Image (cartoon, rainbow, N blue to C red; front, side):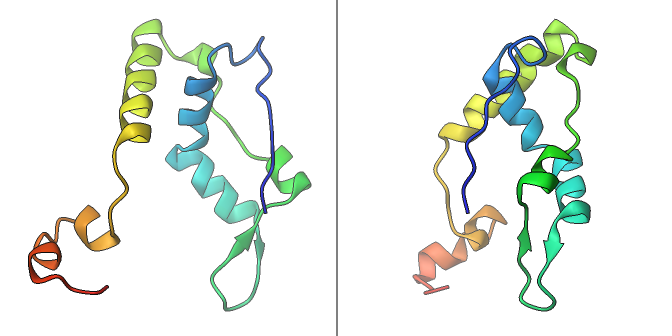
Length: 101
C-alpha cells in the first residue's frame, strides 16, 4: 500500500527535513502503536486515519543548526547503498563466505 502526501509549506518548508522527521524513532513508535495489527503475521497497516494521526516533531522547535545537520544526515542516509541485514549489523563474514541469507 502506498500513499502520496505533501507537506504544508507553512509548517514544513523543507521536504527533506519533513522526510527525516517521518523516519524518526518517535514517528515509527507512534506508527507501531496506532497501526492496525494483523494478529500473527507481523505486519502493521497504516491507512488514512492512522496516517493523519501520526505525530511529527514540529520543525519550528529545531534551531537552524539542527535543521541543517538533520538535512545533511538524511541526504547522506538516503544516498548510501542498502545492504543485507547481516552486513548492516556488521557481519562482514557473510560477504566473504558468500552466505545466501
